[in-house]
Image 1 (cartoon, one colour):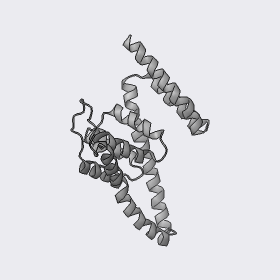
Image 2: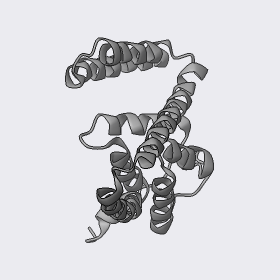
Image 3: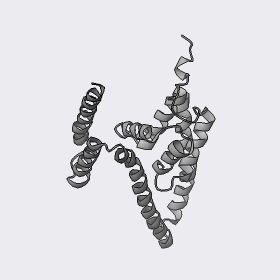
Image 4: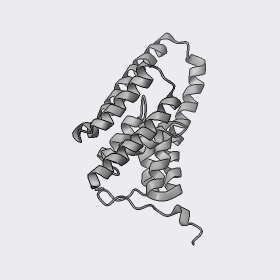
Length: 200
């Protein structure tokens, strides 16, 4: 086995309309996402991956993001590693990760230095409050788009699980690990049962 076999590219699914991205394309794409991602990168990541470059379908993005959501660490950072590794192996994961975190690291280090000196300015506080409102709006927008495949497929089970998790965490305020310990095995079991019935 060659020494660099771990870096071999993973072939993309046949039904995607775009060829697999190169290492440079991965770095540039995730750098653009991070630089455009005011209020959160998820909105811009989905737009670039699904709508602009067509590297994933909407369902594949949802499934990949769901996996990343259940892993430790920031979801979008997990997504960059999983996505890059899917197409270009470990090197692809590193390229996407570096593109995602490199430019913001430089910018935020500079801004943190400035904020430590001018953070008490009242006008700056009002600006940050306005930015936070825009961030919430962007988050609601991408969540709605991620739910569309469930509505289009009329996936009643998926919508019920979605609603149950939302109620458990968002309204009842149950601990996230406890909800996941129930929701994840239940979702997998239901999916396996439905696929077996469909195959019969």
